[in-house]
Length: 68
Image (cartoon, rainbow, N blue to C red; front, side):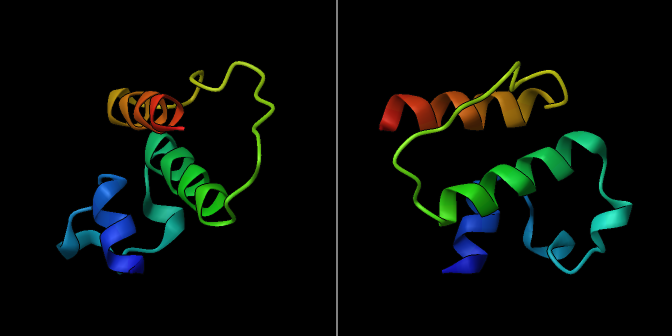
């Protein structure tokens, strides 16, 4: 299930063992949002949530918001 979540968050299989410190800022933000999503919160409180997200992360966040 974790691999599928990483894939859905835009992390190709061959990069899933990469250290977090080596990820770009946008990739790290996507990873943090994935971790938050796995906790299944009832709501999110976000202050400028897309400031540090790359395009893929912005699209993932939009998709997540529209899905719920």
